[in-house]
Length: 244
Image (cartoon, rainbow, N blue to C red; front, side, top):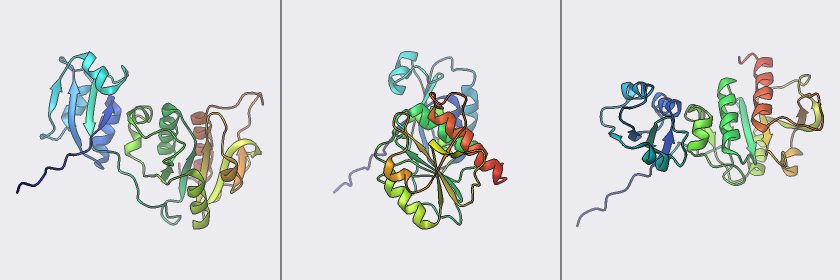
């Protein structure tokens, strides 16, 4: 009796930097690359780093648009194994600086936060399975591929994650209006910075578990974009703790 062959799950990755970072991280395999003929000049970087067994198919731009689901693919689309996700929470002795995403819905904002987290030396990112944008190719593109360079944990909810992190010994800092001036706060490691959604901010049950901090701004009627606020706050924390 013949054994049934197991199909490998494949996800889409597009853009020069996301594919290069995937190859650099070596956490998952690239399975197939699609590009045009002639290929974009920048695609040569991918070809140089591509394992010999990975096939390259030359297709029309329209086909790339369909594969990626967008025109923002820079002329190269790939199929890859799914992004590896941690099976357990972070350890405050090893991952001392983490970020929890609570309800961010826009994939570009989520990708921007991941990019800032990587740049500021964050050790881990919590992206709950419910209430947040999916970790898809759009997030990968917005993070310029740095989603492959960070450790990600996906608990069921932001509240469950916050409880577990607090119980493990993390100091939780909530980025929200009405808090202490973020430039004057002492950010003691191990810590977790919580970033809320674009519309409602951090949920009430999560917000009450930590210290609320607010970025100063000229006009109180206008707030920072979620990914911009995250970048500024993560820089403040990282700089204060001489991580960067």
